Image (cartoon, rainbow, N blue to C red):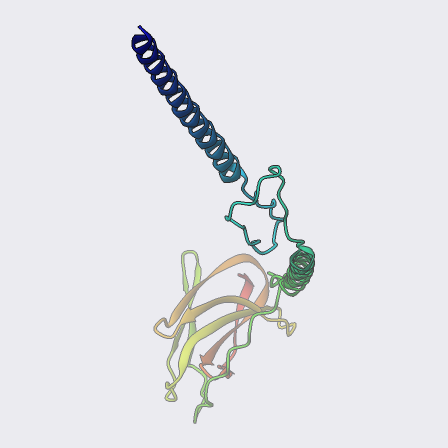
Length: 237
């Protein structure tokens, strides 16, 4: 009986020892799991701690961004001062503004000068009453002579004055037929006929008084040579 009791005690002790070892193992495993979780949390926190880049100022150069994770202790970030880049950007802006202002002044001055230079002064129109340009006179001819064979022949309406071309026929442009009432020295041109015509009709208007008849040769150089004058009784036109 005593042996059975001893064996029972030993088996009980072994069982309790096994339970203790199992409990210890479970405690160790749970401790390892908890430590692994804590280390994972720590690594997650440390991984999430990153540097946020500063907002760049317009015209400034890019700032360097640190991508290395920082130690735990918050998600605060730091940025480098951009005083030099902001100063250079301000200088660039001022230079651009000055350049635009100078360009505007040049454009305005060019426009004003071009408007002054393009002023057109109207030229006065030629007057209609202006004297015509005198044509140069022809070269003088070698000879000038009056018409020959001048005679007046009566007819039903008056009389016909007849003549012949002179020997100096070169340059003749026509003939003038003129009348003078009562020989008062004032001649009235009745007609100017071409060089191919050798007669001119005149009309008797009254039996009173008398008239003188004259036929002249007209040359191209302006010379006019009168022929022999003869008279007719009455008034003529």
